[in-house]
Image (cartoon, rainbow, N blue to C red; front, side):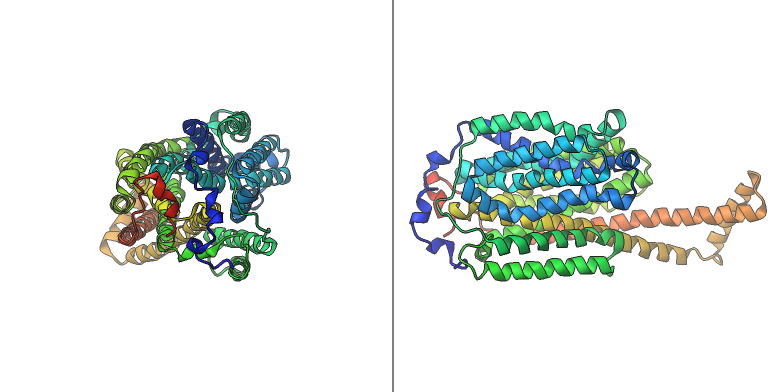
Length: 535
């Protein structure tokens, strides 16, 4: 049954993976490069399209609700396919599935670049996502098989550059392409890179295959795919429509019911699509919880900051991207450093320090207002990126290090499924929280603008006189003064709502830092120990 303790399985199951020499690619550096390029492109295409949405609306002649499926379809398909990647890798070989995913992703990118309508773009984005969604979990599983446990920290640190750098650079790159070049390049640029990476991967990656051939869990695949797609779609609509909307409730309910059925199936069959017994592993489960909180914090801030920079500060997409770029660079610098430190000291210390730094940086950012200098904001963001880069990959790696090698594909699939849900939930929840707090502050500030107050009455009178001196009538000047005061209320409430979100995410960081105290360091000092991680 699927609920067996992995450490109690028959010894024969472990014999194939326990040969470290067979687990190395011909050139580990080139193998890492091939994997990083693929994952970077796949993650980049989840965020790079956002800036080009207005342009595509104009080209295809569609409205906002129609064009948003270009973004939504990619997220839903890539998220729904993650659970099956472990089975596909074990059954057909990880290199083979990696190459197939690269082919599908590259073809889908090329088709997106020649899309002639919104409908064709959505179909081609689904094709693109079918490849892109598999690349992340397959790549993670390959890295854990390519490198012995004492070198996985550095490997995952390099891998993390793609994971952290891609979402942060997407808006910058997309904004530049849309403003100065052809918007279709955001898709077609993947084609030559994908072709080159395909041949590089084919040359340097070694095949990894599970020694156990299992039956395909069809019902598990159907319930997990429908459940995840419905849940992600419903949660994705929360920011726009709120939790009480009938469409949101319906899709979240369908998603939860399907996922509950999925869990019941997985716990009662011999060959589950996802081995949920992995969650009995305390270190692995705790790492999932902490990394979920970290992902929620990361995605929420990336989603909300452009609201301030573009809506309130009046910056263009390119200017906004340039302000967000230094934090991405810092994340890229910190990732390999964190990996090397993990190999030496383990994850607990790095997680605690990184989360504390992140929490302090977010607390500082809660002082943000419209007079804050961009240099100060960049410093806060770089400070936060230092903390995120220090702890993100070590937290994931410490959990994965406790998974037996023959369960590695399932472990990465489960980890990425949780990460996908956390990312979507983080954007939805923090977006709605921001909206609620903004509404609260609008009401509160409006109450304070009591016209019977001497200060408010004086300010209103001064504004009215200024507008009258510009040639407006008394009635027009009165309306203009009221409109100005209302605009100031809206502006201040927006900033205060964002600051509240930063405070709450800072608290979440500190909570995650406390949870990190209970992480077990699974740093391994030598190769012979790497295969008893599940004990």
